[in-house]
Length: 279
Image 1 (cartoon, one colour):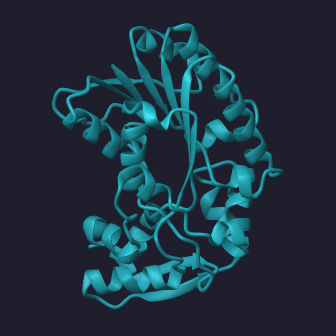
Image 2 (cartoon, one colour):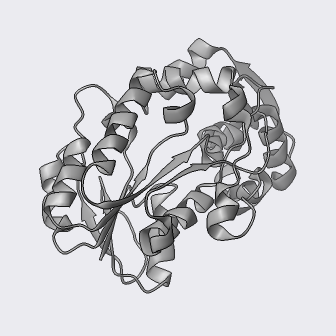
């Protein structure tokens, strides 16, 4: 059995589906009840209480660990999930980390994630670590305003990064969970192109077949919106990257191609697959 945390989110949902289609027994874990693919069991657990996950880990061969925003904040104990998995006899864990662990190692949330990576590497389990950059699916934050006002509001309109499709992250995760050749691999995951928020908005408008207006948010306005879903420290770390990406954060990684033997999907593909959210 493979346990997938964050199983109803942008990465966990396609990962759960892919593993089920490959014939794997999957236990989907999320904070709230949610539909899952046929043949997949679901467990509603808040990972802020790691002990509640422990029964689900008994008998599992592998774990995909994805942390929600609040589990990156002060006082959270995600390391207990890893030590609990090792104690339960889980053989392999794939951790969804972040590119910033390498590119900006001294931010508070990056330091916490680096410590979590070290906990996994020292756990005695087999492991792989995925470090994606910006997600293409972050554009879903714009969906309500696009539907209601035909406007995209975002900061740093003309500063681009190579955003990655969560479907690519999911497929890389599935490979790491199932294939021994990825053991002890640390994979930085990006899309195939640097693309700005304004260009993303234009891509969505093209797929939608409707013009969109772009409103450039200030950093403070963007942070205020983001802190509804994540700690302020994580919002600041994210905005630092979006506003002034380093040379390393602009680099196109070959990891998706190396693992999946195909190119990473461009933002236009993501927009086409998810355009219903903007209608």
